[in-house]
Length: 568
Image (cartoon, rainbow, N blue to C red):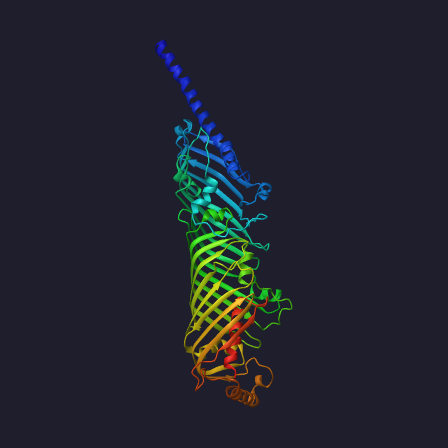
């Protein structure tokens, strides 16, 4: 080999490693400064110092076109967050064994940005606590909820973001976290909190793009064209005494949708444990829901702690079973029940849902003293349509009320139509209601009456019942108008004390006499009676007490008017 050629070969042998080393050093420098300096600074600046990003050891592999990151931690500075007039969601995110693959190496080295095909981590865990809204001194609460535009919520954190000159654009085609855990805590204003524990969560994003010159990409949720969160088989705890087991959860941030399937909610204690812990009268509530679908959900506002905003909420296959057990003695310290306005205020956050649709059924069971089985009252084929379901935390007023229209079939026989108008922001218990029950055999009510009382309906037909009432400061006043024909009862004595509850000939005679006397002297068999053109109306006059649930309050309000007509 000639001397000149030898020198060229030696120069190439020397220069190639130097060039490759220089390119590797340049790429390593860009990646490290982007992940260890620029990204933490951007997070801190955009959050006002609330969030802090810490990135572990980073390895740049240009030949394999990938970047390996040992760990990534996103934490919340609680001290700074507490000083904010609007506290941000408290976050604690941990990512382990992360890889950026399919890297455009020369784009990184040339300082034109970081472009890759995928980003993923072997293990992801997250904990988030939404903060209740804090009203500033002298500040009036918002009187109107902003339009449900999901991009606006995320844009508050994404707008004005600037990237360093050595990496002016970030673009990843696909981001996948197939094995993630999430613990979400949602505090209420009374100090209690709802908890959601998602052990098997998947997070998928496509076309993640951070480019200050691309306004369309900047306004996307989390800078991505699609963001989908999927979870299966997890537990939600709305309060300390109940748990909801959920079969599946799917959220799509870009489409502003949310779907939850297979929900079963019940008390955390078994019946036997509950009886030992609480030897007094109690109510047991069990609920199951086939599917909950939310459309137009503002994920940005929710993440920023600005409450819940949605266009439509649909609940399918809703089943509620309530058991009131009266076999035990009354509680000397009865549970304090809240009015609808108190319950809403205790949520401690605003919400706005344009329309609500619920379909399902409700079963009420009452287990009386000395009874082997409870009386059963069913509301089958239930359909609830609600509009203008809005509440602004801290606001007090009666304007802009919610309207609910319900349809159900009592004992699967008589159609019950009811309308409720409720100002959710009212300072006291206020609402109006009106409705009607259609024709049905009166004996259909025996499934409940026979077990809850000492008599049964022998015959009769309900032609219709109309009612209307207004509740002001917890006092219901109005009228109820029952129309019925040939009503008669038979005293059974079941559950009764004294001679009516005894067996044998004496007991049978006593019950027969009581039945005859009741039908002749105490019971009005027809309304309107023969010779009357208008039916009698019963007054509604009942005051809410803290030991009453809302269904109990409504029933006792109507019951007083019904008895005033039925009893002579």
